[in-house]
Amino acid sequence: MQSFTGSGVCGTNASGPALVSDVDLSLSLIEPETGIIAQPGHPLRGESVSGRVLVFPIGSGSSSGSYRLLSLSEYGTAPVAIVNDQANAVVVAGAVLAGIPLVHRLSRPVQDIRTGAFVLVDAVNGLVIVHEEKA
Amino acid sequence: MNLTARQRDMLDGRLGWPFQIAMQMLAAVGKAYDADELIPVGSVHLGMSGATMAAPGMRLLEKLVAHRARFAVPVTLNILSMNRQAVGIVPAIDVQEREQLRIAQACEALGARPTYTCNPFLLGIRPAREESVAWNESATAPYINAALGARTNREGATALASAITGLTPRYGMHVPRNRIGEIVVEVKDDIAGADAFSLLGGAIARASGDAIPVIEGLGRPPDLDEMTAFCAAFAAVSTLAMFHIVGVTPEAPTRAEALGRRSAATTVHIGRAALEAERQRHETARGEALDVVVIGCPHASLDQLQQIAAEIGDRRIDPAVTFLVQLGPDCAAAAETAGLAARLAASGVTLLRDSCVHVAYDQIPQGRTLATDSLKLAYLTASHQVDVRLAPLRQCVRAAVVGRWTC
Image 1 (tube, rainbow over the protein chains, first blue to last red):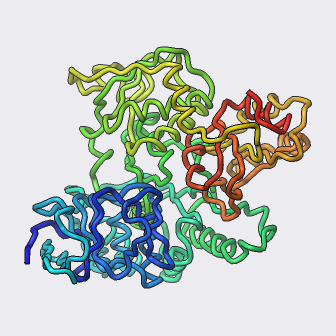
Image 2 (cartoon, rainbow over the protein chains, first blue to last red; image 1 turned 120 degrees about the horizontal axis):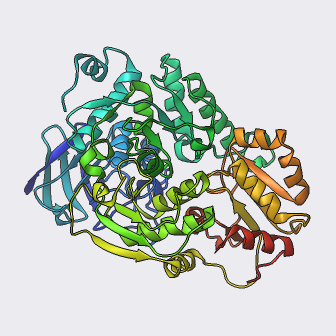
Image 3 (cartoon, each protein chain N blue to C red; image 1 turned 135 degrees about the vertical axis):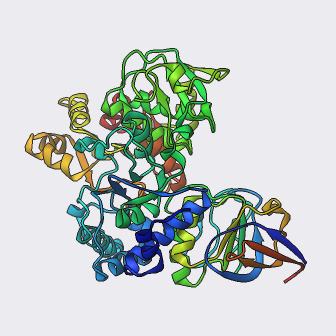
């Protein structure tokens, strides 16, 4: 088990298996009905964010990403939590609207978290706890 | 972040749910950016296309109306995903159109002005120098910051929160030291016309990377259409909300002041070759095919409509080509009054009011070839599996008249 100290931005806490992107991610290019990443050329294209702790360095692309996160939440396909190196306004506003815990600025780069690891995100205390074994 | 007693009451829900949800967004964004306080905004430009907000966004707005929320500051509205004068023409988008109309209705009930344009500067709306505002629509942010010397970040859903509270966290472009130029761009050749300034905006954004450019060498200050075209292209290629044109940007009377009196900035040179490289980068079409021409990204002015009419002259657009001009409802009304709309219609031009082909529910089918004079539209259209020609207005008109792309 590893504990990373960060800064909580909004929400409380949640846990689930991690889906980790090494590169920036555009929330507006996630399909609302399925939660599947449809961003052309993205390494995680075809993966679903639904029920997972979504980990990526920073949001990119259209400012409509905030409302997309709200849609994912209403469809029940949203990630359970988000971890960023730096949270930008699009991701933050979306996380608030969707009621998703968000932590950023960890003591280590977010890429150190492995996809499939079981992750607890505590946005109240700004903590991310990673269980090494696959979920 | 330090909150006043009233702001704390908003956040804690003592002043009702609309203030609470809005303040939750602003407080979280302020925390994420280490803002020290919330500051008042003078106005908001709000993005609310149905393509962006969808049914959940519609329900959010209608819930605000049901809670008797009212916008705290003047709010103008960005484009819709439809032309309100063409409702019901495409049965497949009937449900979505009804969603969009309800979104628009909710925004108007909250007190917004029904401008429905991405180019509110054509309406004479000009925030004052050093005034903080919260403007959605990426193309407007550099105009606010660089042309007017007012202050905005590139806003998303946070613009809605600012509309409700009249506040924004003080970070980014609201902080003078974050607006200082970091790289010098010297323009070597004479640039004129909105189409050329569109290419220039893309080329300068690309050459500057993450550094705020200080632009010199333009023969004269850009006119309104040139400046808005430049800003739209700049914001399409760059994530920045700021540049300086020496002698134009209020904070840039001289190069030294634009650079905050720092030295050792890198200088890059941009000329016609860089513009041509930028044009080719966005052009994906080959051969002679031409299905659609789209002018008016950002939304066209009355001047531009007159230019298009003059360019067509007594010729007629080939019936096989759809020639669209995107514009706001005010400009469309002015064109009707001036007889210009009728003249353009007789030439085979269709006016696309309130909307644009990128966010419209009624999409251009995949595999078609689209020609435009706008780098921003060429950039956006690449995500629609449509082949793109990026060329000056004159060349777009000539090709539309003969019905095929000719060089």
